[in-house]
Image 1 (tube, one colour):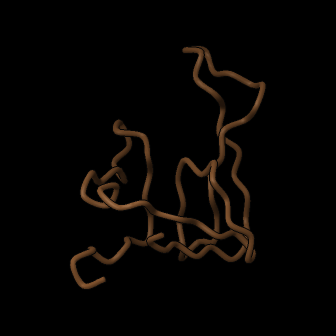
Image 2 (cartoon, rainbow, N blue to C red):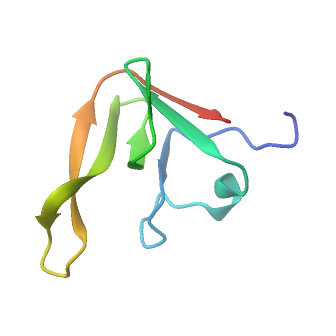
Length: 79
C-alpha cells in the first residue's frame, strides 16, 4: 500500500478540470458517500463533503451530462 500516493482532498475524472491528476487513476479509486459505495462519481471533495454525479437525462449545450452535487460524509479509498 505504500507504493500508492495518498488521495487528495478533491479529485476529478475530467481531464479538463484543474483537480484532475493522472497518477491517482493508475490504481482503482473507490468513493463512499454516507457509508454507501458509489460507482458513478465524477468529482469529489472530502473537506466540503460533496460528490458530483452525472445526471441520467439532462445534458448541457455541448451534449455532456449535467452534474448533480450530493452532500454528505465522503470517504475516498483505493480498492
